[in-house]
Length: 349
Image 1 (cartoon, one colour):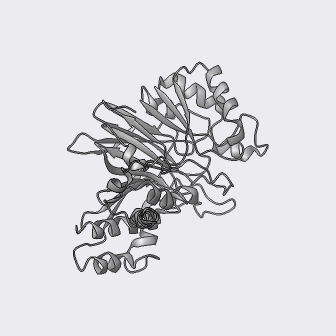
Image 2 (cartoon, helix red, strand yellow; image 1 turned 45 degrees about the vertical axis):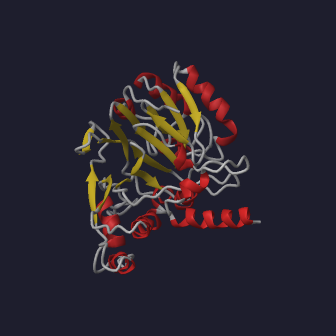
Image 3 (cartoon, one colour; image 1 turned 135 degrees about the vertical axis):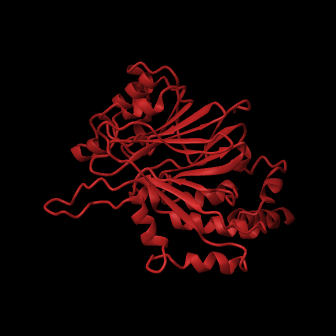
C-alpha cells in the first residue's frame, strides 16, 4: 500500500520537476521504467521530446522537439511542438538552467508548446529556490517575404515578430509572463527573452555560426528549403561531438549536406515516401527517403535518426531504411521514439 502512495507522490514530483525524482526512480522496481533523464550520459546528449509530425494519431507521438544536454545538463531546446510539454514532464528533467531555444520554423507543430515550456522553466527555478533573471535566447528564421497569393502580405513573420507578439510589453498576447515570473518567485525572478533572427534565404546560403559559448558550445545554422516557409537547420557542436537537426526541409539543394558533414548524429525529417502522399505539396515541403539517403551518405554521418514521423511513414519505416541503404549510406539508422536518449562522448550508451 505504501508503495502505491509513494508512486503517486513521485508522479506529482515529475510534473513539478522537483529533483528528488531521480532518487526515487533509482529503487529496484522491474515494473517501473527508468526516467529518461537518468539515461543521459557523456558530453553531448539528445533527448527526443517529440518524434511525430503535425497529425494527432493513435500512436501518440508528440510533435517535433529535442532537448540537448551538455555534460548532463539540459541546455538547448530544438523546436517545441505540441506534446513536448507532457514529454518533458514524463522525462523527469528540470530545465531551470535552459537558456537556448532553437526554432527551425514557425509551423504550429514546431512551436505549439513554446509558452508552456518557458513557463515551466520559471517554475523549475522557483521550486529549486533560485531566482532567474538571465534571458531565454530564442533563435529562428527571418521573414523571407513569400506573400499570400495575390497579395503583398507575407505568409510568415520573422521569429522576432512572432516572439514579440507573444511576450512583449505592452501588447504581447502572453505579456502576463512579465509579472507572473516575478510574482511566483517573490521578486527573485524576472521574465526576460532575447530573439535572434537567422538568414532564411536558401539560394547561396552558407553555414552561419550563431552562438559560441565560453565552455566551447557552438551552434550553427543554415537556411533550408521548406517551400515558402522560412526555415533553418541547426548543428550543435560540443567537445568534439556534433548533432545536426534538419527541421522540415524539402529534397532540393546541397545545404543539408553542407551542414551535416561528418556529424555524429543527424536527426531528419521523415514525413513522406518517394511516391506518397499523392498531393505534390507535401513533396515540396518534405524530404523523400531517397534524398534522405543521399544526404546521409554524402555527408558521411555516423548515425541517422528518422523523426517527424507521420501516418504515411510510420507503417513503412522498414522500407524507408531500405531506400536509404540503396543510396549507399552505411551508418547506423534509428527510428526515433518519444523519450529516446542518444548519448555522444566517452560514456556512449
